Amino acid sequence: MEANDLLIAALAAGMLVAAFVYASVGHGGASAYLAVMALAGIAPQEMRPIALVLNVVVSAVATFKFYRAGHFRWRLLWPFAVTSIPAAYAGGAIALPGHWYKAIVGAVLIYAAWQLWLSARAGEEMREVRQPPFALAMLIGGGLGLLSGLTGVGGGIFLSPLLLILGWARTKQTSAVAAPFILVNSIAGLAGAFMARSTSLPSYMWILVATVLVGGWLGAEYGSRRFTNPLIRRMLAVVLAVAGAKMIGV
Image (cartoon, rainbow, N blue to C red; front, side):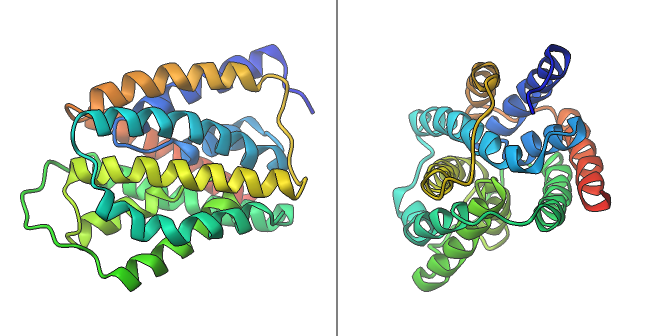
């Protein structure tokens, strides 16, 4: 069912802000896009492909910006990505029943809200960084990839806190690794969904793509050099929590 002009404008406005905030920390913004769509009443079968496409756009921009700023570490990315890519493809090929999709996405949104709220007071950590164990990184990557494909998130909202909590990366390095991790998972999830012919995109998709491209470019440019205003993150966290509760409660 196609959205009317007013709804499309509201979606675009919400996603513009989401793209800016999330790209500033190296994320694609899928959890926020899902939240905006949940609040707007978009059908579950449309939510996942839209979120994945927008994730690809914004995470590609964030990957470029953080790489150019000199924060990217290939040795940190590839053990996670090598298993996440096929898992995301497999997850994308699975079309969950509507009630299961809402429950899982609702839980993801509430978790994302919690992480975003905590990140509002985070600063540049000064700690000794160590390389993650190879086997553990592959195991984590596979799990996050599957979740990415199933729900339409890129997995970065889960990977980032793990990297920081376990001392595997500093803040800027985490953002620089999360962005390409989200990018490859989102592409793999989309490929799986389209190969399984379980998804389609609305005609207004190009408007949302153009919107998040602008927001993502500005956010990644800002975030690769400094941190986003904590108040904006907290406001977005509240939106995610409300949308998550709405998904679970419907």
